[in-house]
Image (cartoon, rainbow, N blue to C red; front, side, top):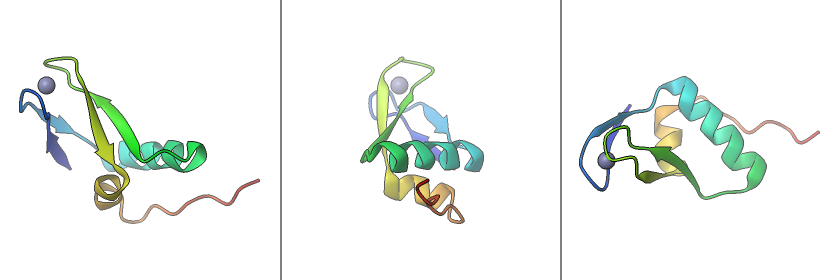
Length: 65
Ligand SMILES: [Zn+2]
């Protein structure tokens, strides 16, 4: 899916694979947002768990080991 940079409006592409990896990190570290760096202005954009879930609807949390 595509989001837009909050600062400069550049399109940021988040693949399903990337969203799944991001959700793994959010879940493991109990974070509310995943940060994606804009390739154009280099600022960090906060991507919420909700948005990531839309990009990776099949993702499920892994059981804690
Ligand atoms: Zn930007």
